[in-house]
Length: 212
Image (cartoon, rainbow, N blue to C red; front, top):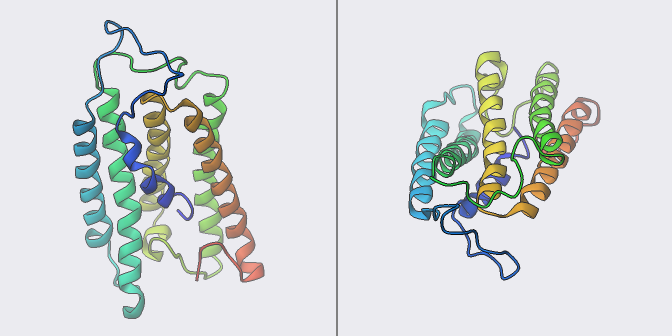
């Protein structure tokens, strides 16, 4: 859970439909219903608020040193707020009438299929690499040690984060940002892989992208 949360949070404003560029031919009125950006933003805002409260208030920070507790609460709130914001925004777009701007299938596409599989894979790597450095008594930086030390909680968090990452790509897909759809997926994989490598090297080197 190191490099992925801020990427999710930064992309939330793109949940709304941007006006098509001049190079994009508008879809026929009968083929797609217009997007409802206010509904998407409302879903994102409500989900982000709920996630932020969950991450900063419902998580136990009893095991965190008092001097570090506020920073951990803030980072945990960002993680769960990002997840909570992206998932309902993607769901709201998915439930809209009409196909939207979809020149290719989201899941079964020669680019998207391996990219989406890669996004899921980097979360599996994040899970194993984080457990690796925790077994060597290194502290979790973004969430709390109690979360990553609990397999059910950490698996649930990684699963939700993977779903949110794919949901973020779906937002780009649904709103017609198809170049960003693929470039952001590739960047997501690259950042996640770099973080996993740093996690595996951290106990030996003492240097990490994220960590204490």
